[in-house]
Length: 364
Length: 81
Image (tube, rainbow over all chains, first blue to last red; front, side, top):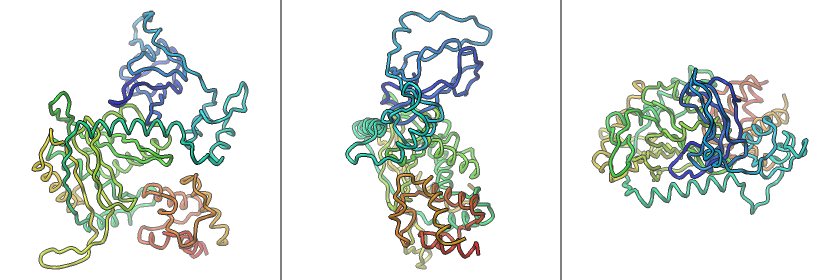
């Protein structure tokens, strides 16, 4: 059972997508586990053959428990130590068809709350759709939501307890960036249009190249700089809560590739189909609450990261420049920094770089 | 296509994006994104779905005309006529 966050204690195997004897290679998805925050796809980290599937769908297991055995190519099968077999906890299994499970994920239906009418009480797609459209009692929250709230509470409480935050903010004239985006989108079919946030993600990634101390983890009382820039992108879920999957190597992606990554991550996050590495790899986080009308975001750093960048709504504001007063679209960008890792001086340099990069959007 | 048919087509698309929303309660002058809690990503998906289903591509420069239910029905009725 992989650890998908410092506060994860256990996970539940939802399904295997392989069977014994199947060949697998690094990066393949072999199953889905449910954590308190989301359903996550399990990746494999080496090439080989599935030798044993030890956990069964429905089993809830602690982090570190053995889920399966992958035999290296050409190696003989190994007998599992008895002690490992005993770590497999038993849990009540919900009978549900794969189609119904997928529909439940798409519609945000908690299968534990659905009455199955299929063979041996199995939950059918029809059961899920009926449950999705049934009015929920106002006082009852779905179990998955409660679990996610608990996970967020644990992570944020730890952050507030351990991290001495400092906050800096700056107002950025977005006139050039928005005109650049409008000119790009004017030429594109609707399916290929870019969202404002894509430009912000790229500018953050490029600014982090200049201030690498903010792209780092704080571990065992020391700063551990990260070479790759994997931007955690906060995605809110309609049923409540949020997940923060990472956009890998954001600084190396062009705007089209970033838009594709954002589209893919949001779609899979809301369908409960994120991968384990996407949950754990973020080296810094962006949260964009501009869609909700908020002007300034003072975020809470997600440990062991050392920085979070918040963006609010772009608002038309009076703007003085070179002795002239005009109206400009203005964005408030905020940096939450870990004072153990950096100080306000470096944080200010980051925001200055971010502002400069957004004034030359065609170079992003 | 009548206004009622456009409205029904739009509701079908919106139910995919905001399945929990009571669309019958949606006022004609209510801002769609605010009333249905639709972010910029979902709104873009809504426009893509309109293009795929009604064959109308709405340019960014017309976004202010399609911000409300009444506005988007009028806009599409004009484009479809």
